[in-house]
Image 1 (cartoon, helix red, strand yellow):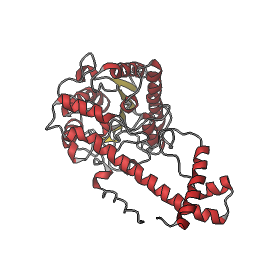
Image 2 (image 1 turned 180 degrees about the horizontal axis):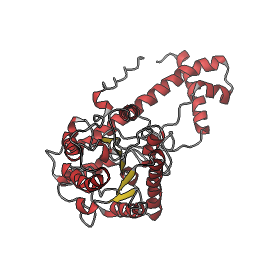
Image 3 (image 1 turned 180 degrees about the vertical axis):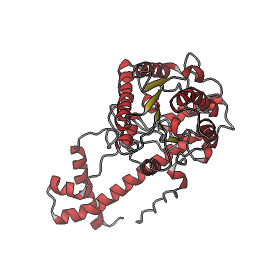
Image 4 (image 1 turned 30 degrees about the vertical axis):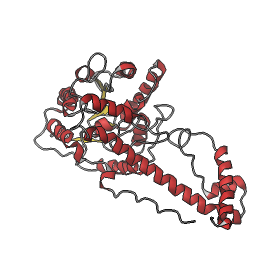
Amino acid sequence: MKNPIRFLPSLAAAVLLAGVARAQPARGAAGNAAGGAPTVPTIENLRTALTLTDAQAATIAPLLAEMAAAQKNVADLQGRYGTLRASLAVDAGASLTDPQKAQLVQLLAAPARGGRGGGGGGGGGAPAAQADQPSPRTDDNSKLAHEQHLAKKTQGKIDVYVEGDSIARRWGTSDAQYAPMLANWKENFFGWNVADFGWGADTLQNILWRLDNGELDGVNPKVIVFLGGTNNVTNAPNTDEKAQEIARGIKAILTRFQQKAPTATVVLTGIFARNNGGPTFELIKKINAIVATYADGKKVRYLDVNDKLADANGIPLPGMMGDGLHPTPKGYQVWADGLKPILTELLGPPAKEDHAPPPTGDPSATRPATPAPSPASGG
């Protein structure tokens, strides 16, 4: 039996913490809330809320620290899980048929409640309530990627700034499993100083947060290419209200671009068709129809390549989407073919040299795995 002297204070602390947790207001996906783990309060919060004595605080503090460490570890593991889950269908490509890959993606698409996807993801974590409200990613892998981007923006020369989620990220990443995509990137963009700032599993809210926290500050690109929103579409209802909400998120990102890089021309790319069409594609069409109205043909250009990626029902054409969501090199070439005439018009032909910063990759790929916790003692 466990030591009763240790057990009783722990039980008392747990009861006190449960009372505080019930008193906490519900929060969105960025905080912890509904569907996620509640925020672990600090000992200072508890002193004030519960008028704790020093002895009570000393009893509770170790448990509080243990809970906070456990929550951090869970968030980190969820981020790593998202990276591996999103990569599975691509890595299994040699042994699966296209229909099998599409079915696998659907089976893996539903995110864990309260989770956030990792670096390679496209099916993302649960979005916050409104697409035009900035929301940070809380997993350690995404925090490291944000630091990578802050460093990357200071390196080399950036004339074209590419922003988005995993569809953008996989094109210009250094990750070994996406080497064919990077080769396609270099083949199409070498000489234009193009830099990739996409991050996997990001919703529009997450991209807004990154833009609000320095990733575009001081870059002053001539062109910004944006593709995002597919993670807001995941499991979303096909309603006019949802289409308008997601379009507002894209509009908010466009506004950030215009505020932080007022001389840049923005190329808004319509959300790509995905999986097997149906209601999801109908929602995507509604969003893209709204987003197209944001373009003036001068400082804001709109590019939609879905007619070359998918059929009229939104079902990806053979060879275009390796997992039903992320393009193959052939699919990326379709996007490149749409972008290159615009880049040539705005920048002229590509130079013989390229000075863009080197590509970055998924931080978790070069970081040691989190060690498993040691078994609890007792008996």
